[in-house]
Image (cartoon, rainbow, N blue to C red; front, side, top):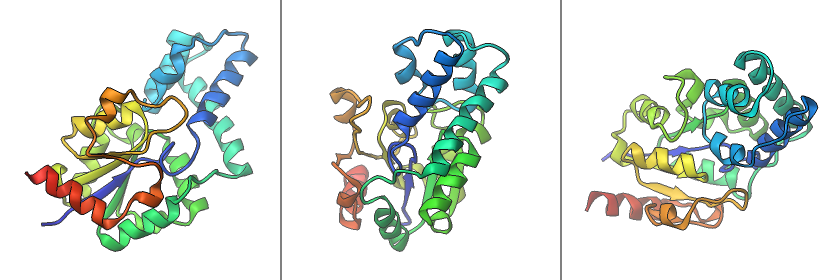
Length: 223
C-alpha cells in the first residue's frame, strides 16, 4: 500500500525557530514594545495572517497586520541571505525518504521563505508537494489543513502519511490529521512530555530517520 513522508521545515530541517523569535523581538524593541513571554510559543506554527495579526492585536505592533508581516519576513530574508543553518542529517534524510517514496513538505513559513531555504539546501526537486499554511485556509498549525492538502496532492491517505515534526503546534497538527508523527524535540521551546507520548516515535536527530523506522511506524498505525 502506498505511503508517504511529510516534513515540517522550521526547526525540523533548518534551525530557524529561534531566528523567528530574534527577528520579532528585535522589531518589537525597535517599536518600543515590551515582549510578552507567552508570545513566542503562541506564534509557533501560526500561518502568516495569524502571527501578523497576533503581533498587531496582542503584542502591539503599529499598523495593519500586512505591514507587520512584511517587516518580519524581510528580517528573516536578511538572515537567510547570511546563510541557513541546516540541522544535522536534514539533507541526507530527505534524500533517503525521497528514495523510499513520495515526500511532501507542510510549513507555516511564507512560501518565499520555503522556496529560499529549500533552494539553499538543494532539495527542492525531491519534494512532490509543498504547502505553506498561508496558501490554504489561512489557519496555521495545529490546524491540519496543510497536512491534508499535501496528502491529497501525493495521492496518499492521511493514515499512510508519516509526519516529521518538532514543535508543539506542528505535532498537534499531525495528530489532528490522523497521521502518525515522528517527533524531533528541539532545545528551543520543546513540546511537553505528554504530547511527545502521543507520537509514534521520538528521535534525537534526522540521522535516526530511515526506512525501517517508517515501516515500523506504519505497521503500528495499521494495527
